[in-house]
Structure formats: C-alpha cells, structure tokens
Amino acid sequence: MAARKSPAKPLACLTVGYERYLMDADKATQVMKILTESVTCEEQYAGGKYTFVMGDTPRLEMTIVRAGQVRQSTPSAHFQLEDRS
Image (spheres, helix red, strand yellow):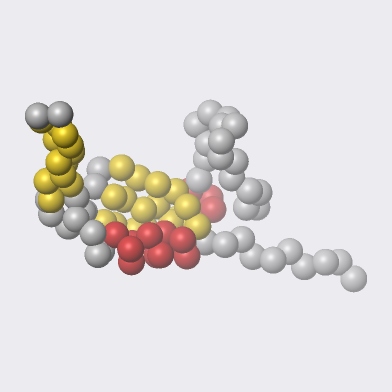
C-alpha cells in the first residue's frame, strides 16, 4: 500500500504596513494577534540619546495563498519553500 502524502500547510501573505511576508498561515495568524496590541514608533536621536515616539496601530492584512500561486524569483540560501506539489 502506498504511503499517503500529508497535505501541505496553508501559506499566507502577511502585510505589515507596506511590507509583505510569505509564511505558514498559522504563524501569520499568531503574528497578527501580537501586532494588534502594538503601535508603530519612530526612533529619534538628539542630545546624545535616543527617544521613541509612539505612532498608530500598524496596518495589518492577511491573505491565504494557494500553493500554485507561489514561485521563487531567484534561489535563496536563507529561505527555501518546501515542495508543495
């Protein structure tokens, strides 16, 4: 009897501000939960010290991504997508 292949974990595109991150959908949900309790900040340096000015709640968006929608533009030594076929 042939071994059954387990289904691939769903992926998600997590948008934080204007940056997008591709990751496991469960992890993206966890990150969103954490970031909903945060605010943006700007680092300022004056008088020999750093201060941090609080901003607004970050813009967050999550999109579920099908395996057929993912491709790598160039090979990366840091991040390799597992075989999702």
